[in-house]
Length: 198
Image (cartoon, rainbow, N blue to C red):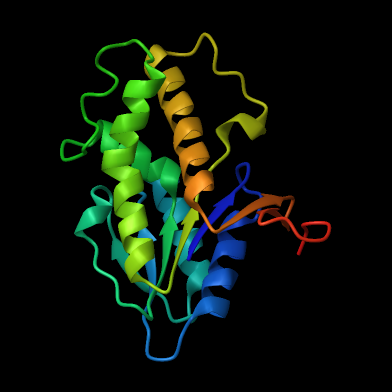
């Protein structure tokens, strides 16, 4: 099963994703927290520490994977929580070892070209993991929900935001469950049942 948990910054999506992972945990299976944030700078350090404290004592094994999800393995009873797609995408674009390292170099946003590259570098590895594990939960940011306007920003920032939007759409299409967290309230977007909020 593939779960996508999205929302604006600091909306409670990480806590929701962790609780979902705990509910889905299977006896004899591993519970893995796939950390994609590179510990770079004070702000990143604070966020990483906060997330470590949130999951302390819950039984997660942390696996740092900043790029190339295809390197991960998973057993059929394992539950993997990937935190988070916005960091993974940035790493794939800007890290020396990233699979999308050259994608912003052309300076022109070509949606179809980017979709193909996103499929091969990120979507395929995610689907492969989801096919092997009991569940994969992806946390992502809806950068456009924060009310920020990125027009006029550096061209690379605009391309990154549009790519994250494309990636979120592609993940939502493939996911079995899509949840949007608003002010700590989880609303099920896919599949629809009842009023959608849990």
